[in-house]
Image 1 (cartoon, rainbow, N blue to C red):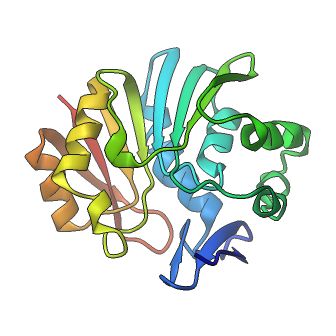
Image 2: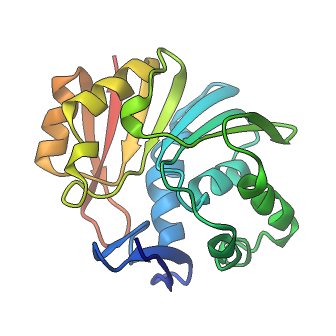
Length: 217
């Protein structure tokens, strides 16, 4: 499927899929969305000094990169992606310059350069494992404090927003673990509730009224 690099409203890049008319991030701002949904509503809610994170839809590596930038805690980060971005696409992403994080340029490159399927020490506090797999094949149990659920929209890929998938997410979380996502549709909320999650509807990032945070009680 054809993929194009485009600029979002906050100046940061994302990937656009013309065939689906879908973007990897919000057209209103990739970086703004990532900070609002995953950092402020997710990472900052975890009080532990050792945090295990599962990202559903590793994509451009933006969520991974800003997690590394924003946390001084020990992070074990697992990113799941069925269709990894190419080296050529990575070279066109402008997150380092837009975040004014030039001293971390080699870190962003390393995030993408390290091999899939193995655990890598990105810096002294950040371990990364990238898994090239489909979401339906996730089998982790009671392992993660936090899930970044960043799949394509329910209208585009409804099979990624089913009860079966969210049951896997619920199982993968530790007790009191949380899942955050940009989506806020009633159907998504009901599906999460059906597998046992307690749901909060929170203010969304620019361009969206709401987002969801789900807790495993």
